[in-house]
Length: 153
View 1 (cartoon, rainbow, N blue to C red):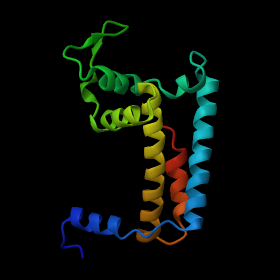
View 2 (cartoon, helix red, strand yellow):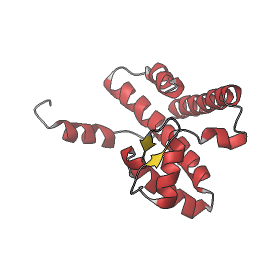
View 3 (cartoon, one colour):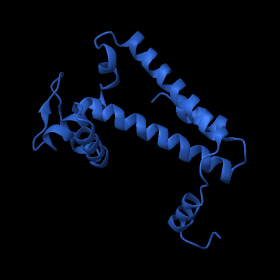
């Protein structure tokens, strides 16, 4: 088993996932909702400059928004303190997917970025819980999913 390339082994494991059972669906839903409530609550307490969903789209979201709306910058832009920065460090796949969400749902670019981020969180919770339950131990997905859902980075 270990003499196969890692990518081939990982692909086989991912494609061997069964359809989600009711227990896993409930775990994922609770973790997703709980983590969103925690993040939204923390942002409302700590960030009083923004209101509503605007608090969900700050920091790196602004850089992704600039990629989505204007593309990559040709020259760095000035920042407070005399430094310069550009959006070159950000991978293009996320804004590309958000662009599709923006087009399909007819929402603003920032709303599309938040929707895409929340969707990716939901998908990553599902994949991570299934991977842990297959590779580590059955019924260990709740603990592993909790770590992923509630990590604040």
